[in-house]
View 1 (cartoon, rainbow, N blue to C red):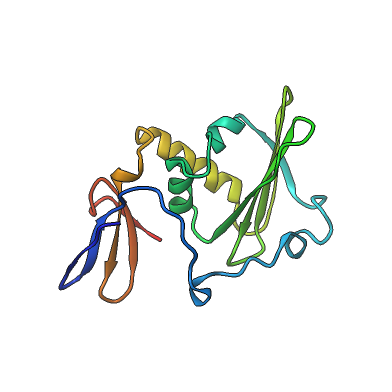
View 2: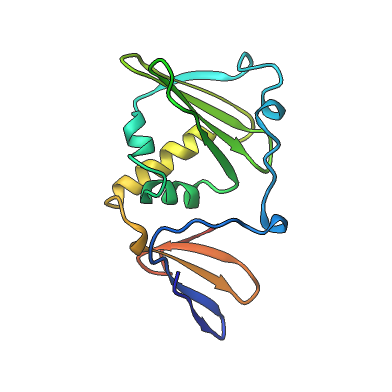
Length: 166
């Protein structure tokens, strides 16, 4: 990112894809799959979705869609499993509670979704995906970040006036 520092804080656009590791003190802990599903998916709500595997995952890890989903669905850990025998589960885990969602993509079959917890993570993910699509599938260069002098962080699309807390 390229930030400009001023009396009220710092603000600026993202410039391209990058990957880094947060300092441990800044990370929310992911306690692992079994902490969320000690008894499996039996008690979860079950539905189907029209969202396709390609629509959600795109073609790679550094896609702007993944970046946008991360900004729009805060405090969420996503795990994309390898595809085996035509099936690929994608898991979402809430990092501030025990909410979780799993979407199971299967070649040639309807896509099943299970979710449980206070947050309906799959609904958050699909809303974020639709938001990104409706915005014209923006790339990194249309996103930015503002950090106020008191430490509040707001991501934005196109201008700082079009922001949301992260």
